Length: 326
Image (cartoon, one colour):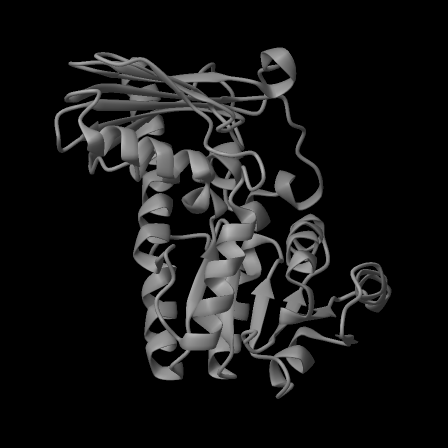
């Protein structure tokens, strides 16, 4: 027996809505999609292109409609808090595009609203669901690497910002906040618990950063690093190699998750899977079940908040470090 259909309304019609709509189209009749935008033409275009169920003239109209079970907040970060609170008040489940909020403390306010509404808040952090994340957790948990000493995660590429991403008040932060939060989730959730963190900003630039090094100390004794940049041309069209070193072995992996080479007592190649390499389909399968059942998502609010706290720590300590060097 097929699960009941879920009705979603997208608030905002930009790149994130385009990506999610493409993924959700693969679920067929299990998902009904509506579109709302400040520009009615954009909503109509998306509804037509992705075979939606209809459009709304405003975000408020979408949240008030009884047919809608959940809203997907796919607007710039500065509007997330207001829209999430309004949706929960309207007793809708909420899917927030990352980064969830401008401040980690905003989770407190929204958490109270979530409890009152009886609905769920979900953060669209797809790296939580990547096949690579599962494989790395399994490799570390198996003991094949021994005690993990170093986890070096490389996420550098050349990417131009545009539009609202160049406005600090709207964007909330630079490259680490907008894109690096994905990789921070991976760094912090491979079976090792982050105890402390520090950020380092290369160069002497001001304004929104485009490169950042995050160093974390794990409670288990190891050290992790994330080299994140939007201004480094990555070799081989985006292929990057990251590594984990332990006392009994090591693992080298393509950062996106194409392949993992585990070396130690036994050498083996693992292919996590290309079909859902970014984890988007698995994420939406989880979210749709959350909407149907009301259970907690795999990507919890606690986990999403921790990722945002690490971004804030990186920014704060990077400033302190720069001042100390000067």
